[in-house]
Length: 146
Image (tube, rainbow, N blue to C red; front, side, top):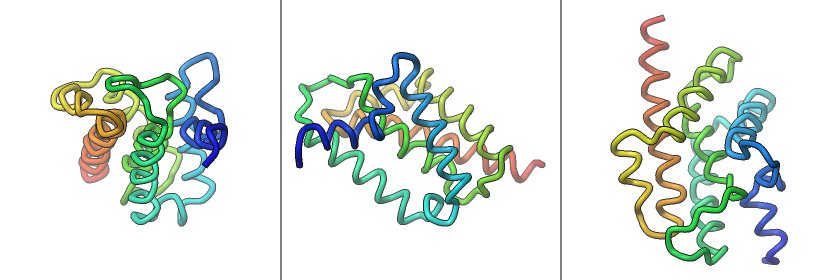
C-alpha cells in the first residue's frame, strides 16, 4: 500500500486536509453517504468493516504513540456510521445523530476521554466509536420518546 493511498484513505479522500474542521466535514460527508446509499452504509457489516479498516489503516500509518493528526478522519467516518446503525437515514435522524456524535467527540465526556488514552490506533479510533455508541443510544431513546 503506497503512502499516498494510505493518506488518502485515512483522510477520507483527502477531506481531512480541508483547512477548517476536517472531522466535522468528514462526519457530514458520512451523513451524505448514508442518505444517498442507506442500504450499503447503514448495514451493520459495513459499519464493522469501517471500524476495522479505520483501526488497521491508522495502525499502518506508523504514528508515534499519542499522535492523532488532524488529517486522520477515517475514525470520524466510522463514528458517524456507528451512530446511525439501526436508524433510518432520514434528514432529521442524520442531523440529530450528527450533532450528538460531534458534540460527544469534541467534548469527550467520561468515559470517552479515558478511552482516548488507549495506546496507538486503538485510542484514535476507540474514542470515536465510544462517542458514536453513546450517540446511537441517545438517538434510540429520542426515537422512542417521539
